[in-house]
Amino acid sequence: MSYIGKTPASAALTSSDISDGIITSSKIANGGVETVDIADANVTAAKLASGTVQNQSAFKNIIINGDMSLAQRGTSSSSNTTGGYVTCDRWLADIDTQGTWTLSQSTDVPTGQGFANSFKYDCTTADASPAAGDKINLQQRLEGQMLQYLKKGTSSAESTTLSFWVKSNKTGTYICELQDLDNTRQISKSYTISSANTWEKKTITFAGDTTGAFGNDNARSLDVIWYLGAGSNLTSGTLNTSWGSRTNANRAVGQVNLADSTSNDWYIAGVQLETGTSASDFEFLPHDVNLGRCQRYYQKTFEYSQAPVDNAQKFEYHFIEPYSGGSISGLISYFSVEMRVQPTVTIYTTGQSANGTGKVTLYNGGWGNATASVQGGSTTKCVHFDTALSGTKLAQFNYEASSELWL
Image (cartoon, rainbow, N blue to C red; front, top):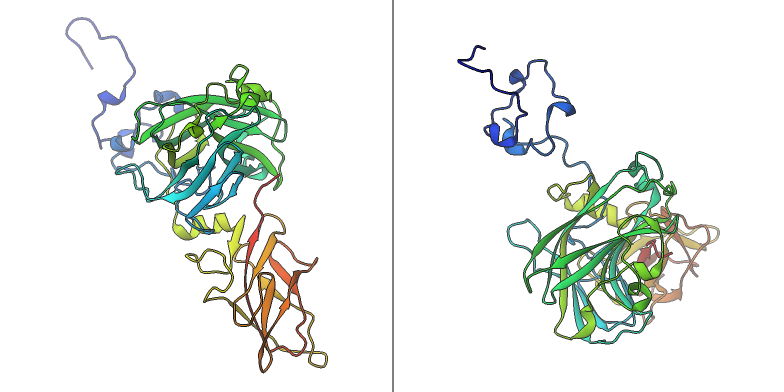
């Protein structure tokens, strides 16, 4: 191309130089665009003729149930002073004597983002002066075998970006932490809630860690932690904003105390942890896919909307064909999906016969009951119950099974 006067200097194209919807394969001279040809973050979905960026939803979110849509155990739990896995699936409320809390799956969500639920902390008994060992936080604990593509412990370790929506009446500084359990390492970053009672989106990038690989197994390797309060054991040092050996005093420095008033609450929604140094749109998964991922760690025979209780109106039936002279030593129930490890199983009565938790209702011409126990032959795929079933034609019961990452 000829020019009048001096030839203009060459310059890289930016997103403002490209009209929306005009990039097609015919516009590319050699049929392909390489990384070196494009400045970072300049190709967006709007710039593409198809209007979409392909392969952007392939389980990129390391967090499970980040939209808080699943709560198999129930939607609310009150009087929590020690926490545990309650309400939203895969989310551990870690509370160590710092206040009393109601934890719930809330319908208060950021407008126009596609979320139906959030996780809510509501302070019901305050603790304005926490002891040194006190703490409140929300965690998700992750298996090492799910994290191998992060290449942790190598020179190619991937950075990760955490994004989430948060809302609280208490403004100020809050701390997020990644904790490596395999190598006793951690990194903490702060974020600020600027406006009271307003949904705000936060994005935090953590550098890759070139020291210490995650174990390639089903054990607990990485904790993602949101602090809501902490005593001096976790706040008396200097915040460790680079990967390093874990020093407790450096983990939550500067964290506000959400437990200082019963007026305080805190909500979180749309949590995503992904590789790279920028946050992408939240990855929504189909309900059945999300449920199956959660059931690896917790499942129940109750209907989804029924929290585990004795005397529920619906329960699991087992029709039994007696053998060996009309006696049988036990029965088997298969899990919906294979669980992480052999789970802890709690049996609930159906109420058909006067019994209690841990008993199975039996029928052989009349209703009876017997205490049931889990046999050692149980696996990650099924549970074997040992009970007195001599001559029994029918057994009915409910149970819940947990293989959550506790230790």
